[in-house]
Image (cartoon, rainbow, N blue to C red):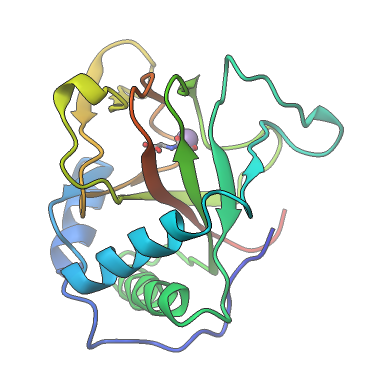
Length: 212
Ligand code: OGA
Ligand code: MN
């Protein structure tokens, strides 16, 4: 999977308030943003995710190396890593690069790179409660998910449920509607994607530190 380093910084297309994001991450460990990116960029990302009719998407796996496996009942999405050669993907990556630098300045997180993929959950797919920090690999620091679904109805399901760090109480239930982005500390919050009853599109990514 690609990790994106040495990308251009695009201040113009980022409308998110990085100071506010940093402050909330410091205090609560997560933030839900309504429309952090310009609508035309989010629309272009939707088109990218939609256009090839899933031809380039692969079954998502859980775990890594010899632990890597595919179990539909645990994780049902298909994924496609962003492509630096594509102008739309590059615009998104540039926004996230601006965010990476801003968060490093504000919080000294030492975020080194960002990896991200489009994800499609077809009707009937979900992702059981899990942590994004893979066994033995602790380099994922912040998870981001940007949702690309216009006119999402409550009957479409597919909500992201975020749990307290101890995995018991629900902290937040996020509707995967167009333009919404959640950012959270990857290691701190177990989370689950409820079964989707419609085609659910998003971009999931991780800011990482180097090493390990
Ligand atoms: C993931 C994940 C959440 C979502 O891909 O690890 O938890 O809402 N995604 O798509
Ligand atoms: Mn996850």
